[in-house]
Image 1 (cartoon, rainbow, N blue to C red):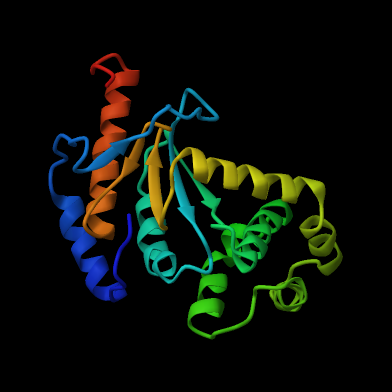
Image 2 (image 1 turned 90 degrees about the vertical axis):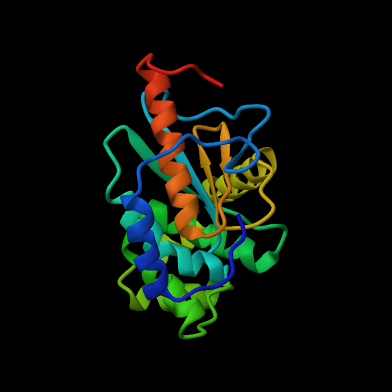
Length: 215
């Protein structure tokens, strides 16, 4: 899904209206694209939602507060994971490494909004290791642990895996949502996409409980 930038207040108001509507059946080719082949998920007991994103993407910056509010309302059988994309850009590769490094240090969730703000509002340079290091240390992250992790085999492997996933899911723009390795969410705007995701989650939940046919 590719969206034009919109004001946070207007988007939040529209989100509230969209979420108040009853969930209707989702239509392949209009509301979502079937992912072929179906991609594996980490836990069969959970309904997995992936957000393909980049800290460097202005649309991801706009979407992030709406997605965070939506995630907070999900039931316990839903797990939402972020997958940083690079699209072959060196700068985006570095901030993908930043994401995975902060996951290891335990600071990814705490600093997520600050990172988006630094890049898109304060126009800070967080696209090279030295600039990142200076910034995260000011935010209370252990500098040595950050540097060791940022340059580790594990983080580089995760970035390569994320690139493979973006290719497998046929991601051409961000932010993009995928449900259960089966559905790439469409939608005319952020709010529509989240409403469609709700419908797909309900569909998968019914299938897992034996109440719906898998398609």
